[in-house]
Length: 179
Image 1 (spheres, rainbow, N blue to C red):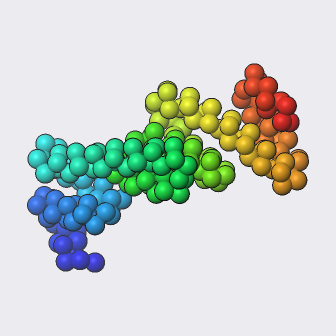
Image 2: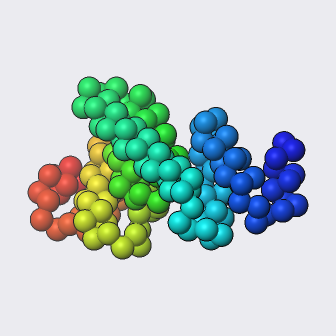
């Protein structure tokens, strides 16, 4: 543990120490840790100029990584897209659309459980557009996973997946045909 961290533990309300440490964490790209410091700074002084600068910097970073992710997905560079969305989530962990984007990447990589876990992170977000899009994505994941099971010879599992998808959407003929 760094001396600065020890000082922060001993004097948690010393704003200048926490700001200094947060700046270091951002520069080292340890964003998961820096967000807790930002929250603490915000609870002490929500209008702190340095706090607002760091939040704006993280927002810009997150937007840049999100755009890079979308470009990588369009070019079918899915592993690079996944790396970019991870960086975007690190910068903006409360922006739920990024979890939907990561679920889409996992779906294309055929990492079904990971895709569904990201969909779970969206549940109850309060954003009706994102929640609707995530419901549609779940159906696509079940369908694609079912097709993948058929290719692997796991017919019973495929039928269960197609039935689960049909339970949510009764009008999709392709799923009935697959089942």
